[in-house]
Image (cartoon, rainbow over all chains, first blue to last red; front, side, top):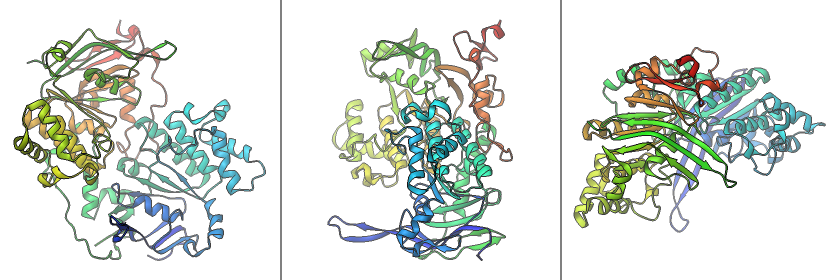
Length: 301
Length: 299
């Protein structure tokens, strides 16, 4: 992969290992939560990171945002190696890189009103002269207006709480937002509203998203490109339509086949095909560089 | 042939501390035929879980339940429960909190076997291991000795299903059984439920918010909204000939149904009151298909 001009964020050979400790705190092994992943995120795109729970997708996201130290490798933001910066200088980048969390019930402080929730990052990360005005503007962008801004989280539904979480992320005018399973705690109809809101904000504010999800139907809808992770490694990366139409890695194929189809006739037709069982593929000792099978479509060997 | 479950006129009110009552289920009729898998779909707060909890009598404390009839496996539920145990098992969304963390897997299974099948010792153990094998757990003898934390979420949900089956139910109620699981594991659990229906004639009420799960698994579907069943029919009738505006909105909100569409349709607009509230009446479109329509439309 050569550096592209429209590249915003880049992970180079990033690993994150955790020690596995035995009964007396002795180190008995190492868990490679992220195992030598290289990928780039382009300005203005939505890169989806998909995989099962435990595949390392959230840990990789956290490494990109410097919420988690990398064991090895580099993370570059607009060409600057964040992993090499001293912590004080790294803080400047926190304003540009924000997060939306999965669970809108536990990610908001129950003792603060919607407005106070949004004011907090503005006060910490910006020197905005009028943080209240900016916070109200952010809340309005997600559709929370009027007296509602003075209400506490318990007065809001799950979808509205997620809107507050989004307002908090966009209030500081970031360039990059990591959405960590932003809709998986919500009902289907509310999911659609939040996905549409994210898409609209991306257009209005020129945001770049890393969209972490295990829900492949939402991913297909929102993502420009898809990265598939399994057991800490990146197995496939490519344009969304190409990966869905022509998945190359056996693991990606099995993942796509497992999506329930909301169409009874197609579901019945699929059920007649023999069940593929667990996919079999090589698992080299060390992850190998991905191979480009068509322009921009990379697959692990 | 008798049904596994036949409920009519079920109404549930929940009273708040100041005595005001909120009606969470309005005059619901619901049926699960023997060997049938019936899906119950709707958003949170639509009453689908309350409906299932009414059957096994685990409603919240301040709930008041009334029905005109409830038959389980062909006989009156209340009389049956007084005479013997109720032949209904229920499994829940979260397999992480449903097992006792300080007891081995075997303990959970043998507890059910001793209670419901009057077997003990080695015979109980053998049955437990056979059942683990039946629900697709590899190396069941080893799993029998393990603790819940040693098993993955999918494995734990299989253990829950094994426990449910050992109670020999006429009806299995599965409340969002795959919502907490990954898509590949979800597919395996749904395969398991389908094969238990095929091989053992199990009757299942499957509560879910995922229309994809319904399409691939269920024979019939009931769509719930604001405490009422707004539409009910065979899976094909509901998916290809939806009559109620809420059902249509729900189907349109499924992502991926049409990948080329620029925005996802939402059900953000509340369904017009006349279609769900007191005045609405059920109209039959076929022997198996009914939906709510406003009284003036029906007339």
